Amino acid sequence: MAMLTQPLLEITKQLAPSVANWPRRQPGMLMVDGKALRYSDLHSFYHQTRQIFGDRLYDFQSDSPAPFILDCGAHIGLASLYFKERYPAARIRAFEADAELADTCKANLSTFGAEDVVVEDAAVWTHDQGVSFDSSHDDSGHISMAHDGTNVRSVRLRSILEDGPVDLLKLDVEGAEFEILKDCGEALRNVSHMIAEVHAMDEHQSNIGELLSQLETQGFRYVLGDLHQATWVPSTTTPPFRYCRTDRFILTVFAWRA
Image 1 (cartoon, rainbow, N blue to C red):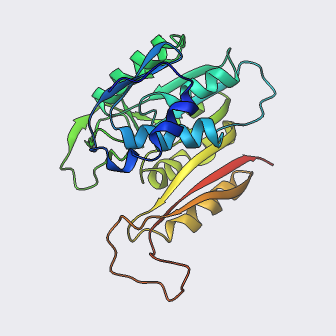
Image 2: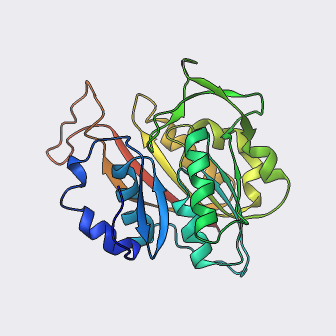
């Protein structure tokens, strides 16, 4: 798909009435301010663009004009593009486990002048011995605890954090955040700011309390926001509250050093 050259948010406005009707996981291209931006799934592109560039979900205040940012779960590169727009001198390491998405991410960053972002074809995880990954080619690819996915390279996030200060850790890893942050432990003290998407999509909801307790132990303050009831995820439990249509949900943790 190609569209007339327009700013990114203008394109999302045009897509809004019809995006729900587009077939999922069909790659394409959009012309944004005269440059070709590639996507792997129009639905994912639309919602990420609205959140990242419209709602400015990943905006944060840094004391450094060149903050060091870890973009974990980089998808097609929209978050890294936003960070470079916000802080042109930012030093960014981006990780994407889906090889096809990583290639798209690299192409988009290069097209829009962010060639200095280091993109690694790898999943952040609790070790560096490789991990099974279920590639969906949209924004829901995830580490497979059942080990029935494709084996991909993994990078232990704790090891990266132990190397030195990180201005922002952005973590959107579709449920793997619980194990990853637990493994990071005291290494989280090298992180100044964190934006982590937390997925209560199965029976592990109790881990949210453990995750937040860990952040408190490591000296973070936090705010919870961007809550979405995941009505598209099957569940056998119906909450006894009119407002709650499901017991499955996604929220974002915004954390910073106290």
